[in-house]
Length: 110
Length: 115
Image 1 (spheres, chains in turn red, brown):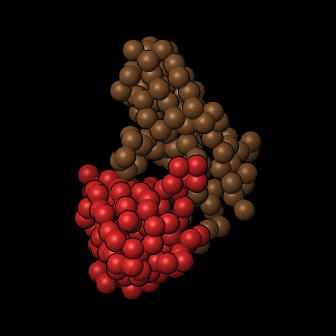
Image 2 (tube, helix red, strand yellow):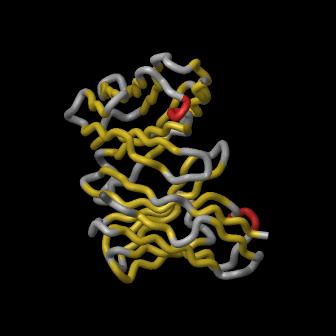
C-alpha cells in the first residue's frame, strides 16, 4: 500500500514563527503536492514538485516556500506564520496520475 | 480554465437508500477523474480512479461513471450505511496540465446517512 505520512496531525504556532510541515512518501513517486483546505474554498494548490530539487508555484504560493532535497520528502515552509495561514494542510503524491494523500495537518497560528 | 462543480453541496438520506453524487467539469480534455472520501479532520482517501478511456469503475458498493463528452461523472453508492457519511470529492487531471498531474478539485458533497 502506498503511504503518505505527514509529520504532525495538529500544530499550534505563534505569529511570526517559521514553520516546517513535513511529508514523506514511500513509493518512489516523482510528483508531490501541498494543498491547503479551507471551508467554502475547497482545496487550493500551494506548491508542487516533479523531481528532486524541482518545484513550481501553485495557485496560492504567497507566504510559503518548499524544499525537496530527497525524492521521498517534500517540506512546506511558512517563512513567517500569520493568522490567515491557519488551515488544514494536505500533502499528496502521484503515481500514473492516481493521487494519494496524507492524513493532513491542522495548523493553528495564534 | 478547467472548473469542477459538485452538486448537491450536501445530501441527507436514510440508511439503505441508493444514491448518486454528481461531478461536472468544463473541459473534456482530461487524463482521468478520481473520487475521494474525506472524514472530518482527516486526509483524503482515494475511492475510484477512472482513466479517460474508461466509462466506469466499480469497487464494492461504489460505482463511478465517466462521460467525457458531456463533462460529467457520477458516483453511485448502493445500500448506503451510516459509515458512508463523509465528504465526497471529485478531481480531474487536465490533459494539458504539464508533466506534473495536477489535480483540480470540486468543492465536495457532504453526505449524511441517517440510521
